[in-house]
Amino acid sequence: MSRTRTAVFAALALVAGASGPAVAVAPAAQAAISAIPCTVDYKIQNDWGSGFTAAVTVTNNSAAKSSWAVKWSYAGNQTVSSYWNAKVSQSGTAVTASNETYNGTLATGGSVSFGFNGTYSGSNAIPTAFTLDGVTCNVDDGSSGGGGGGGTGGGSGSRVDNPYSGAKVYVNPEWSAKAAAETGGSRISNQPTGVWLDRIAAINGVNGGMGLRDHLNAALAQKGSGEEVVQLVVYDLPGRDCAALASNGELGPTEIDKYKTQFIDPIAAILSDSKYASLRIVTTIEIDSLPNLVTNTGSRATATANCNTMLANGNYVKGVGYALAKLGAIPNVYNYLDAGHHGWLGWDDNFAPAANVFKQAATSEGATVDDVQGFITNTANYSALKENNFTINDSVNGTSVRQSKWVDWNRYVDELSFAQAFRTELVSVGFNSGIGMLIDTSRNGWGGSARPAGPGPTTSVDTYVDGGRYDRRIHVGNWCNQSGAGLGERPQASPATGIDAYVWMKPPGESDGSSSAIPNDEGKGFDQMCDPTYTGNARNGNNLSGALPNAPLSGHWFSAQFQQLMANAYPPLS
Image (cartoon, rainbow, N blue to C red):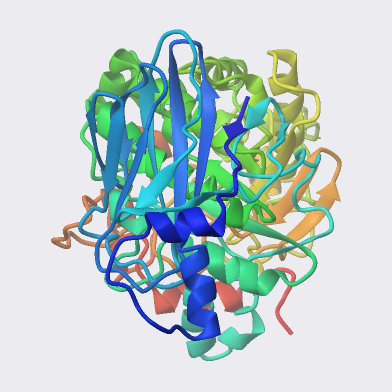
């Protein structure tokens, strides 16, 4: 249960406790500032009887600061064990939290948040008094608390069934500016896209760009009086993306503790800020991680040594579970766990095992199924939303569509049918019956002149499928900067049964990976699947990669791809 401390100290006590030189006369506004020089919001987000997680937000109402220190004392034997976004020290019951090098600036009216884990025995009473640089603060939570979906934290009230219903969705101004700068880009530059937190530095902003707080503040400004969804991609697992070098991450396979304390904990501390309680925050949790444990491990031809390492050490499962638990404890956060796509998990030997792996992760590291509001498919991928020219039940001259080279015994031919069926499977293994699915339609439109107008010829099952399929990839396993792709359905809420929304979680125009090796400090390797001349591997049936040439590093702007996506959009752009 989330607990907060609310108290108001008399103005005389505040003045008496203030430090600094006396002044004879102060203007009215300055006197008001000195009466309430600061406020502190101290929340216990999780308490499991012998330990707890706390989030603290400090608001400075006095002169701007270039450094700060917050102090309090415990009434019991609480002991701080780990911390983030502040340097925390303890002497007996007295605790001091001071700024890190990156968050020392604290403007008048500005806030800063930090958090920590602690242990205790007996009672875990919340401190009753705090000081900021020696000045006594008001202690005020600023929200009513509450919880939904089994979690508690910085939001207010219960979660809604579908966060996208009746809500606007945040338009990332950084992506919007890049899109608008492209010829014809203003046609889509007002569309909502995901904000990718793909390394620790992204939390505070990279190379002068917007950090997490900047995006949340911008979302509040866009929100107005209605509801607003903010879409975040949480993506920095240790040993990330074990089967695709282009999206490798900064953390090594064993750095699970760093993932928890330097990545997830700081994100949770910011999202817990009561300032953002009115936002509906949707998190896409660790794309591609758990599906890799299903398909690219063991003795399979598609297995990799890196994926076998992550299966053995359990850090994908632990990391995802920890992220779900920490973020799921915040009532206005909606966790959607990545579920690959139909061309990955749609086969019989992947479908049910994947659901079980997801259940394992969702019940590890303190997480429960209540911390999962749904799943997302096709993130940053190209699988067609709905193939209208053939179905999985068709046959040609007595041969099932499942036997075609393209379908290759898969049970699904498109994302909508897969997402709806996989939702049923997930509920059957223990996820809540109210979960909803998201489908990323940012790059699966497959319009343009190459889009088939009807079914293929019935000469054979292959001519029938290949002639009629919208998805024009060489192989369903191809994933990097695919030639011929187009924008898909525009983001929309509740488009089909069991689907919470179509989303553009992958911002159109951001590369999947570089066409050749590019030295970088982002931990991103070169994957041959991004090289247009590469002739493939077991995961794509030893076919050409189908990738566009001259691509930059993953996540970097790729103008040629953006122009292609607009040209091949379906529905077409006006």
